[in-house]
Image (tube, rainbow over all chains, first blue to last red; front, side, top):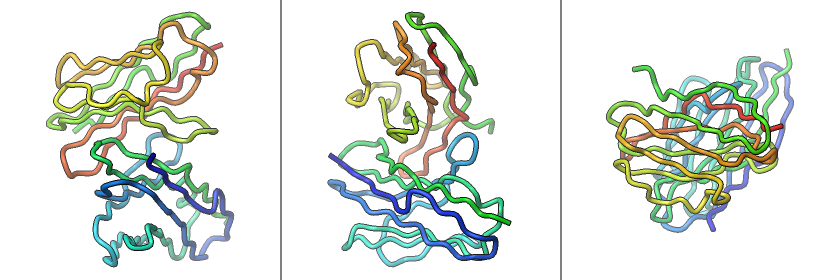
Length: 111
Length: 112
């Protein structure tokens, strides 16, 4: 059975800090790993990672995948209160198109 | 593009009633997914369709749950009869092959 484990479960930091969110996975026939940000409503897409060692960046957010060690990290630098959200990691693989999600990291940025 | 559209946004119903959740995927997306999100279990895949055909319904919790996709622009998830433990946020998502998924805003279901 595919499995995605995220850590920490929750994190409270001050505005301006840098945070690193972790995602480890077990999946047969891995295809991709995706990061989502969920505020009050639907998860919104951040990154899709398919290759090891290639960093994807979007503003203050960046992410990288290690397919040998089966994990990914999501970095957020110079955090802002608007970064407060649940960050979800998901993997696709196993011959199916659906995603397996982790439970998420609840990030709170305090002013 | 209006994105993935779900209705209703919120529903409160009594135990035993039938509930129907609706989803309109993004035009041109050939895969549609139904997910359920709870605090305890996070986001779980219930069922997905490729080209309107159900591919994997192993996540559907019980026979009380059923899903249909009569055409490329519409899908329903039905719970009959509903129970309090079905209370959750139900998300619909759509995608094209090798592109990211787009989620709808979800339906928050409360069964009392």
